[in-house]
Image (cartoon, rainbow, N blue to C red; front, side, top):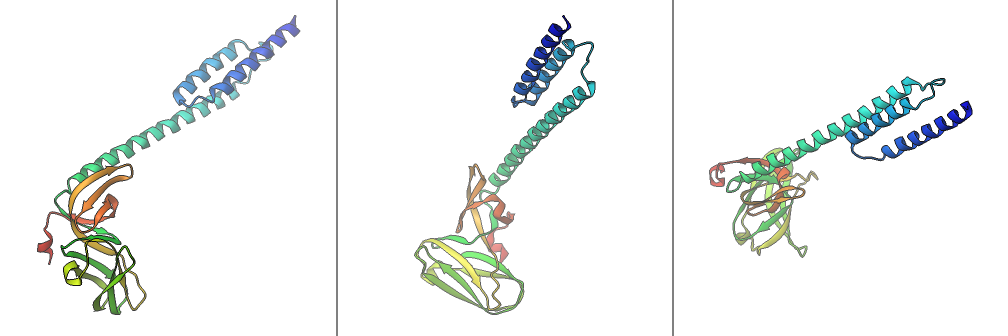
Length: 225
């Protein structure tokens, strides 16, 4: 009789263990925890009184389930925070429409209007060139003369340079070999919401990601010079 009880106990334990393995595949941590508690109670109720199960193992498994649930809760909180930050970023970007901003860029979308920008040197340059490259690879060089280290402003007048409307790559060449980043000022025409975050349509520059903005305010460009 004891052999029959022992065999039945093993079968019950095997079925319960199999149920635990299946429950682990559930992605929802809360449901996983509930299933585990149900299976644990069933296993305790069906254990062999002459060979009781180790309670320490139950506690370790339950602790593991609690950790999984905590991790899922933390993931949900982080996801909600990211959504909140995206919404705040979008609202901030929409508030810049009609205002002037400065952005880091290597691309300009030129028409007939002049474009104002700046660059910062870490070394002196005896001969500094502003280079504009069109879509066909043709380069237009604008001599900026010698510059010491520090921040320097420049202006691009497409009509005076004989540049046609279009997209240009802009860069600075120096005698020291330094290639400084370029900041360009422009007015925000509109904001487009994308999966990568808000993009600003800036006059004279084109579409620019929100995180490329280096400076913004309500002061008109004419008041800066």
